[in-house]
Image 1 (cartoon, rainbow, N blue to C red):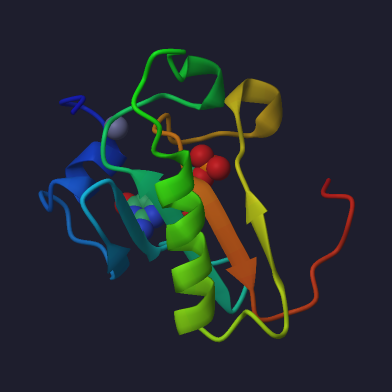
Image 2 (cartoon, rainbow, N blue to C red; image 1 turned 180 degrees about the vertical axis):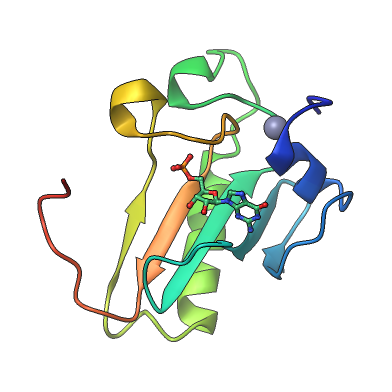
Length: 115
Ligand code: 5GP
Ligand code: ZN
């Protein structure tokens, strides 16, 4: 837990969010500024700034995150139509919240490449 981190506070239920999935390692909630009909953020409960910051000896929440993404996509009806998972990392990646997170975007046809 990082005391000043917005997503740590959401994971600790100190700041409300519209939670769609939770287990012991992972929590998922609707993005406050949705960019698609479905826009959910999946985060590990333990703080980590971004992919560049994951320590090599850390317990591995990645499988839990992938399972959570699959469950959220299924629950929100995206499995058949498809969806996109995005992890913005650092300055050039456009990351604005420094707690690693995975955007699930779906419910419309998404363009490629991103800008
Ligand atoms: P990033 O820009 O770091 O890839 O994504 C951060 C995301 O967090 C943005 O899509 C932004 O809308 C979302 N966000 C920022 N503040 C809040 C908040 O307080 N609650 C929720 N649910 N989402 C937030
Ligand atoms: Zn955090």
